[in-house]
Length: 222
Image (cartoon, rainbow, N blue to C red; front, side):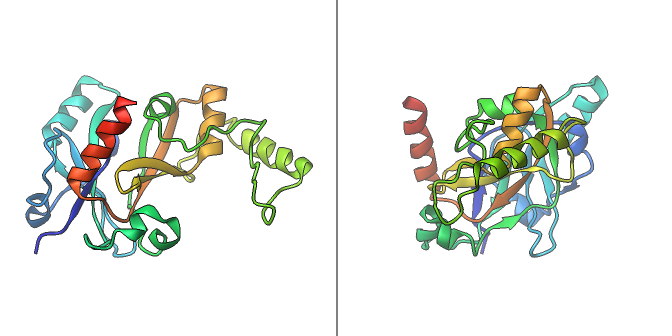
């Protein structure tokens, strides 16, 4: 039985040097990927010890490196670990959490370009940083500002590869990618003009492909 493959809702502009070292996707998995995008990466699963692999596009990546091209467009895909019939975790974080997994690699891209994709669930600034509405987790004003300033200081020497921004593929309704962790760092990088950042990916499941296409079509029409 072929694995159920989910696809990122976005095309990500990735530095080609991050892709050239990826091994080719095994033939039995590559045949299950229906993406027509010229460069496609199948993310691995840290829980299972599998690595990210390149489904297609190696020649384009090599050409980009040779010509000095800074970024190439990449579609990311993943093996869904949420059964096709089990739709509740696609909509409720509480149930989705037990399924989600991280990929193996990090990828470098532009913070400005990432913002253009509209993956932030809320833009964070000094004015609203760590402003938690839940009374149980609320942070005192002084501590909130101190925590934000410490983050600003940590980024003055540039974005660290040790702390990538995490993007969850098909996070919203099993259809739309969304930043899962890193909103504050994202906002600070934009404000400070730090454009080169890195990301890793999280996945769990995907809505039926027809629903994903319909959801994205409706969203883009608004």
